[in-house]
Image (cartoon, rainbow over all chains, first blue to last red; front, side):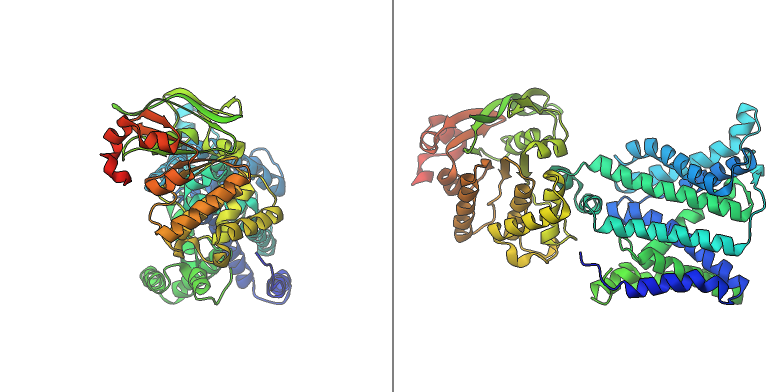
Length: 310
Length: 242
């Protein structure tokens, strides 16, 4: 695969790096940081769903686990933020591993249902753990308050770094042995196995990498929000939004998640401001129209027409 | 020298005995043909050899090592590849990338090495001109050749071909036979399941006949063609060979 046209991405990265100091409003800094984190989450989902073809309906489980891990590490163990999110990522990956082994043996809707159920189960465990065991650890539905964090510019850069990391991993994957294994699994799993691909190891790897980054992003958002409850960080709507963003942008493409997440976040923000009561209906219509006109997503459709390459 | 042998291979599907105590052995560089009516257990036997099914009884010995019960990717990396009766190309990947996967994962090559190999193999099987095409957009005969190319790319020493010539016209069959001989001359061992009698009789050094999951005859093409049991069970009468 040829890697050309590095000027545009470099320019975008430089502009985004200096943007917070170019006099843009605090509102815009915050808004961009939110977009970065959505691109990160959607990109994580895309690594599994887009490249291996396993449509995961429970990614919010790892986002929530990361949130709780960071909240507990910071609020109870007083560990600094950056260490906390890295440890949270590792914890999330460790939990994802034993979940991956049985669920990735399922295919299609069964995999989707299993992952959806897992995410709900984790939420219930955190909700009921303290009352059942008789301790004060997860704090049940009351949630956990984190130390007050720095301002939006800090989260802008953290979000930016994570977004670059997720896109970078995806970029590396696309042209690697690992990436070819994942795509072969997506296209015909048995043929991949018969061609020497260790299918169960490769798809588990993809799943755990995705969970690791989701755990980190969960930790970042927990610190930014400063207060989390199970209902917030295990909200199935987070999963749905990741799925919709990836499908809109183009599943299984490098930049699809970024385009989809940016597009949908902007649409939400604009419509929410101007049509506070009816915006959800309008967003629904826009999604339906885009999906009808571009069934492979924005990037996917441009690729098919030969306009975009990735 | 023996390269692969099956001992007492048996597979049940529920109460159905699909393959019953089948023994076979193949010398390095030999072409073994396997024939038999539909449902005789040929594909099941193949799937046991490459690890898609675990045999209920019996063993597959490859280069002196018992590989029965191994996962397909391990068996592939050991050196046994199979082309499927129902072709399974990676349809949204290019023809080139399909072959690349075999080199990368079956043979464990680096990207650059595997790319070079894939180019060579595609030229050899006559798909050089279709490299950049998505595998989903090429014709069925080409897909059959692509299966073979992917198998070759894994570096396998033994290649099992499950009806790799089905659906080809006589000219294409001639081409396919020529290609298989070339592959044999490079030291590969082939086991061929085929319904096209002319093809399998022409290419095989030895033929094994399965019926209802059991071996009913084995020998040179001429011996098998004149075997009473084979004629009765499978060919229906000598007239078929006129």
